[in-house]
Amino acid sequence: MTTRKLVIRSMRKNIKMYYLYFFAMIFSISLYFIFSTLQNDQTIVTMVEASMNFSTAFQVAGILLIFITIVFTMYATSIFIRRRSQEIGLYQLIGLSKAWITRVLILEHMILGLGALLIGILVGALLSRLFLLLFMNLIGIEAMVGLTFSSQAVIQTIAVFTCLIAVTSLQIIWTVYRSTLLQLFQANNQNDYFVKRPSIVSSILGLAGLSLIGFGYYVSTLIVDHADLLMFLMLLVLASTILGTYLVFRTTISWILYVYRKKQNGNLGLYNSLSVAPLMHRMKGHANSLTLITVLSAMTITMISLSYSLYYSTEKDVRLAMPFDFAVENMQAEAAIISSKLEEEQIEFDHYELDAIRFDGAWVEQDPNVDNRHRTFMLFSTEQMVQAGLDVESPQDGEAIYHNTRAIIEGMENSYPKYVEYPSNDEVNRLTVSNFKLENVMNYRFYGEQLLVSEETFKRMKDSIQENEYKEFLTFEVFHLLDTEKSDTASDIFLTNVDSDLYITDFYSAYEGSRQNYGLLIFIAGLLGFVFILSTGSILYFKQMTEAEQEKTYYRTLRQLGFQVNEMMKGIVRKQLFVYLIPLGIGLIHAAFALNVGSVLIAASMLTPIIISMAAYIVIYLMFTVVTIRYYKSIVINAL
Image (cartoon, rainbow, N blue to C red; front, side):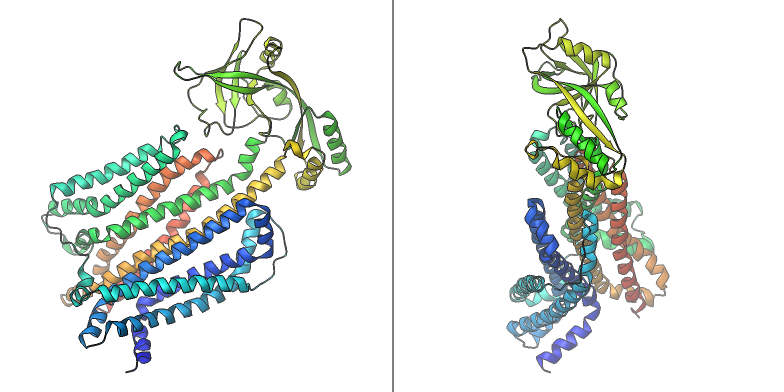
């Protein structure tokens, strides 16, 4: 038999093992080709050249996509080589050289890869326009999009594919040449650890795993209050939760299952024998992969949920930071011109004048050990804000409410009341700040901490703040647009009539800028998230597929003893739910605590986008569970 015929026969024989791996490669290549096509699209190129954020995001995403694809392919290749280890050993027993075996395996791998490359590029070319339209819609740009085929994207994809084949070929060479015959014939059993009795050390390590995860969760709640130690605390949380997760999979779960078996006096029955017993014996061997899957799941859920939350709440966040569509400071002439041009364009609007005081002062904490922090403040009247259309809470006379959308990030949301001390002409030189609100009463572009007081307090402080210190009376001209469909036209009018050197912007421009940035973020997060889900789900599927082949003899014996397929499948389904749901559940909990830390970035509610993101991830992840169960069922049915 020639080498070519042997390769074709081998691939036909292993088609069941290859089909999901082949699909995963096609999917990865398609995604990378689509990503490369977007990178080289003229509209995207123009945006990248105009924005450093777009350029950096695309470069980082491209590197991550390549890295994830290579790691996943190497992991899958190692599983397939291990599964075919006895076949490789038989080749050596009949006298074939390791060089010949390596050449055959690499040839199979290249044929499979070339097929995936061609199909992946074709699928990517067909879907690239859809993804480009989706991207344009996310960032809010209306443009004509044609069906284009990027030769540069093809070159980039072929280069990445060549690198992938080179890496996996080296992996095949290394595995074949370093493996002995004994290792090859025993490879399928190397992860079976038959647990008789957990030692005291195992019990301690099992409890330590849970304790480390709990410690990581606790430290994550401290990050918000200790922003100065952000990097150290994040590294501590990562190290603690990853190590804890590894110990949970390696020792804790096996220990719990052993305790359960002991309570049953070893009488597990059919269902538990097909679920609890295999898990208990194999959990140590699966610790590395299950830890990787859990961490990747947590990262994916966190990344998608956070990016979707930022995009979902963009309008609310910008509105909290910029309550007025337009606002200018001490620019009555410019405000008059803007009003006139808005009227010419027949754009309906409301215009108000607001008084304010800017002065230097200092935050005074209740704790005497905390140093006073000197700041510049802006004082506003509640009554004037209400007349301007804002829904604000009115403080009591002599008190103030602190308004700042960045209060949590700046660590200013705790320990109220606080005090603002200022140079005064009378005996009273302190203003009590009774509370804070996570919103602004004036657009964030204007300098000063925003304090809202009653009209009486405003008038009293206007006279009492010393003249010889920094004190400035301000008049803000603010606008509410009533005709929001013409916001883009109104924005152009505003920006062309204010000095660009003042870096003043309007609500519409700020919203569109945030929408583009977060649209880019969620698009890239979605692409990477798909690859993560595909990688983690496929790795689990490949491992369970290997186990199903190893346990085929057990299923044959059970069928010969008279057990029905449905009876056996109940235990197998329980095992698969355990294998898939435990890393998913722990990953969801990890992500929940990570999102709690990320919530400081977003003023609006994150609940809805988080629920949608997690639900979508769970549904896609459980699809792999269904596919695995169906594969097991085919193994059980064909066992006889």
